[in-house]
Length: 171
Length: 171
DNA sequence: ACCTGAACACCGTTCAAGT
DNA sequence: ACCTGAACACCGTTCAAGT
Image 1 (cartoon, rainbow over the protein chains, first blue to last red):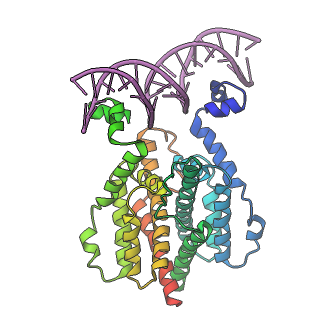
Image 2: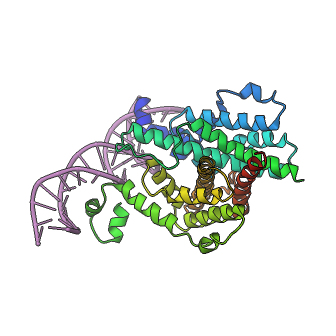
Image 3: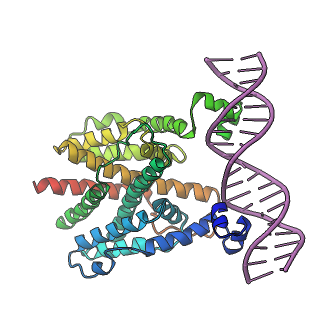
């Protein structure tokens, strides 16, 4: 809040006329972060395979989160507080629903997908911030690190999509 | 740090003789949190089905994280910093490997599982803390909320396990 | 070897007062 | 309507000095 105020050339207390507190301000940010999906947006509606639609939605969400420092943390704390719009989970659920799954299954799958996405990108961004701060001096690497984060992300999404596929073939 | 020091009846600065900083102290905590798996420990080795082994490992990890306030956040920040032991991801990978998957697939799957677990439990615990603080006064609920968190967790794990199963049947 | 005391450089938030 | 000034109640961390 103090740094934002300085950037706006006002006193920190000025912010509290516009927002009741920091979390409410962050919720506004979170909505804009997820609303600005950089790629795959227009293409998503044209995909005839529901699996590709889910993959595209997940990838676009990752890109949107990565575009802002601490994007994943801001979005996930906002989600946890019940602030922010339900659009993110709704869009994922709609992509899943194209596979012919019922509303409940779609919503649960979207939730699982979102938890994976937020967990994955959170980790990615924490690492980015830590070594930009030079905290990881010893060159120590997390057991969760991948040389190709995008591929590791896609692997996880594919696993979840595969699970849905299997559950469908069993009906 | 200040509250911990007070609980130990020492000055905050005394802690810095024992630990270089807060994160190192939290890393020690994180190792103990995941080392203390409450249930399913002994039983895990006796399970002949790799899918049950993975499910049991994931459930035990969730229980361990839930047993401490902010457990998921402490563990995930420690993992991101490359501190703490790689035991958590190793044990998940070993459970997956019982399905006959190669080492690389097992490790990647374990990573995806762990990201899901941390994402899910993080959300659970943030909610717990928020409404114990009375922040969620309006009764607002997150679009990620489930009436049965354990079932939602199991659903996500099953999706990931199912994805692995499908990839195996395709070989 | 282990801890205290005092300080440094921060936080988010409140609230009377200004314009 | 919008902002300042000053304060409150916090943080993690450092470091000389004590025992």
